[in-house]
Length: 403
Image (cartoon, rainbow, N blue to C red):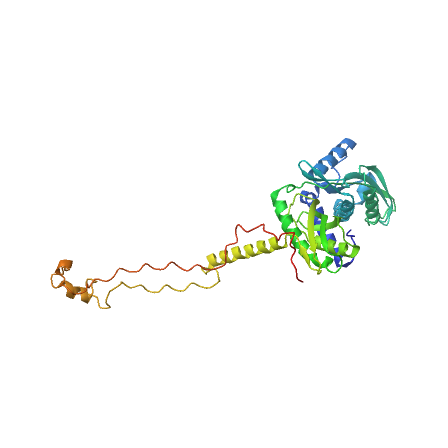
C-alpha cells in the first residue's frame, strides 16, 4: 500500500498524482463545489446543493461555516482549505480501495465490488488560534470505517485562519467519493493497452523470480488503480505462489502499468494478469514476451517506412541513386537534322526511302538492330513486412533456455 508520506520524493510524487486524480471534474467547476450556497439558504436548499455537486463530480468537499464563522472566515480561504483537503482524502480512498476492492466475474465482464464509496458530514470545531479542537461525524454513508477514521485524521491536522475575537467556531464539512465513470471499461482499447502493459511489466518482473523460486509455472493476478491520466497510483497482487520478497519486487513492476487517459474519471480499477515459466536451469520466461518483441519490431518498421516516405529515402535510410541515362538501341552518336543517324541516311539514299527486305542482296546481313531485351524488374529489398505476424508467442510446452 502506498502511504501519503508528507516528506520525501515518494510522498511528493504520490501527492502530485493524487492531485491530478482529485481535480478530475470538480476542479473544472471554478470552486463551485467548495462554497456554501449564497444568502440565507434553508436546509432543503443546502441538501439540494450538495446533491447537485455529488452528481457533477465523483468526489469533493463542501464547507458550510456557521453564521458566526462566516463573518470570520473569508470565502477564498475556505476554498483553499477545501482544495488542500482533496488530495489527502483521495489518498485515503486509494489506500482503502486497494485493500477492500474485490473482483467478480459478471455476464457483462469483470466488476469490482466493496469500494469504500460514500459521503459524510463532519463538524469541525475550531479554536481562536485556528487549531482544530474536535472533529465529529454527524452523518455518514460510508460502510468502510477506515474511510471515516482517515477523514477525521486529516481534518484534525487542518490549520484554519485565527480570529481576533477569541471565539470557538465550527464548520460543517461534507465529503463524498466514488470510483467515478470509466468509459474504457470492457472495451478493446483497454484490453489491447493492458495486454501490452502487462507484458512489459512481466518482462521487468523476471528478475524478481530469478534465483528465488524453483522451476515451474507461476501465474500472477494483480489489481491496479489508475488515475485520470492513466497512471497507476496503487497496486496489489491478488493470487500468486511467490515468496514474500519476490512478491514485493513484483508489485513494483506492476506499478509501472499505464492505461488510456480518461479526464472524466477519478479512480479506475483494472485487472492485470502475468505469467512466468521458470526452467530447470533457472531461466525465467514471461508470457507474451515474444509477442511484445514482435509488436515493437513491427512498430519500428512502420516508423522507418513513414520516415522514408517523408524524406524520400529507401527503407534502409539511404537516398535513392539517380537513374542512368537511356539510349536508343543501335543508334549512332552522330545524328542528322531530322533526328536520324548517319547510317540510316546512307542506307536509304537520297530519296530517304528505306529498302525493302527483297532489295537486300543475298548473303548480306540485315542492317536493322535486334529487338531490345526487356529490362529486368527492379530488385526487391528492405525489411520483411511484419503485418499478419502479430500475436505469435512461444509454445508453453517448450520454454526457452539460456540465461
